[in-house]
Every structure is written in structure tokens, then in C-alpha cells.
Amino acid sequence: MKVYDKAETWEFGGGNPEFLHTNVIFQDSDNYFWTQLPKRGYLLKDPTSIDRSLLQGIPPEHIWPLFEDKFTICQNPNSPDVYINRLDWITGLCFQKYEETLADRLEDGHSVDNESCLQQVKTGINHLHKVDLVHNDILPENVMFAGRHSNTPLIIDFDSCAFKGDPLPDKRGKMPEGARTAEFENDSFGLDMLRKELNLPKEA
Image (cartoon, rainbow, N blue to C red):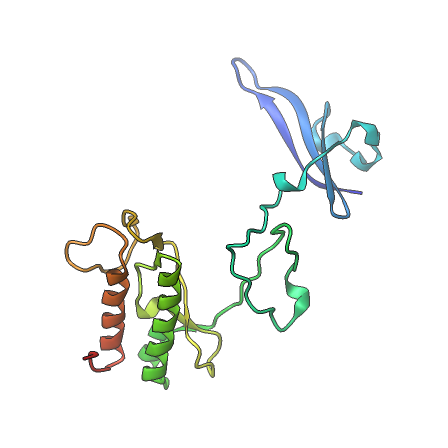
């Protein structure tokens, strides 16, 4: 068993601050416990020697969110040791590092398969629309590639994403004139702008 984290609690009700106790969280394999100790954190020389009868178990659902059937299970990464694969609780997230944006490639003059790139971005947007999500910020800076030699674009930057019909987030990309809510047309507008950046003709 080891100390996972600790934090002191103080009272600031008036006059001089008064120390109350230290909250300590312990980890024992996949189990977590907590207790309150009457000493300052830095005075806890060996908190692991505490009487275990004083510890209260922390239910997993108070730490990790439950995995829900509506979540999409992506393909496993090449290295299975870089993520936690459990289908009961979400105990970790793994994000692949991407190297450059489409804007970087266009600016540097590196080769881009324009038709393929646009089609793959469109496929990604269609996937979002199937689950009633609107990205609301499609532009070259939000399309990335895993590496210099990769030809597979990935859509990033989902802080503007919203469910269809919801009010537009304050942070968003360029919208069709008069747009007030998240609609599929917003992403179509972004795709048209991306098409212009790639010097591709407008679809008939």
C-alpha cells in the first residue's frame, strides 16, 4: 500500500487560519482508501503504517466513470502497454501524438493528395453527423497527420463540437451567415472552405 495523494484542510473563518486535518488517499493495487489524519502532511513520516481499520474504501464509481455501451471502441494501438483496456470503468485515456496540420503542409509546400484528403475529412464529418454531432470548426489547422509520410488526415479540436440544434459554442469557426445553432450545414460550409484551400472545384 502506498500514499496516492494527500491534502490539508484549513479553516479560514476569521482571525488566523486554523489547521483541521490532512486527507490522505492510499492505493493498494486496484483498490483505493481514504482517511483523515490530525497531523500536517509534511509531519506524516510513514503514513502507510497507519491502522488499516481507520481506512474507508473508495467505490470505483467515485473515481472512474462507467464505460457505457454508446461509447465507440477504437482499434487497439500498436503497443498494448500504452493504454488501459478495461470495459467496466474508464481508468485511462490514450492519445496518439500527431506531427503536423494540413495548414503546415500547405504552407511548407509538401505534397498532399488533395482529393483523398478532402474525401477522408468528409467521411469523418459524416460519422459525426450520424451521431447528431456538429464539429463547427472545420479548417486546415484542425486537420492533422500522424507523420510527415502519413496520408491519413484526422479531425481534431472538438471544443466547438455540439449536438445538432444546440446553441453555437462561443468558440467556433467561420459560420454561414445568420447561423445561431449547431447544424450540419455549418460543417458543409467548413468543407467548402477547405475545398478552396485545396484548390479543388466545387461539387456539382
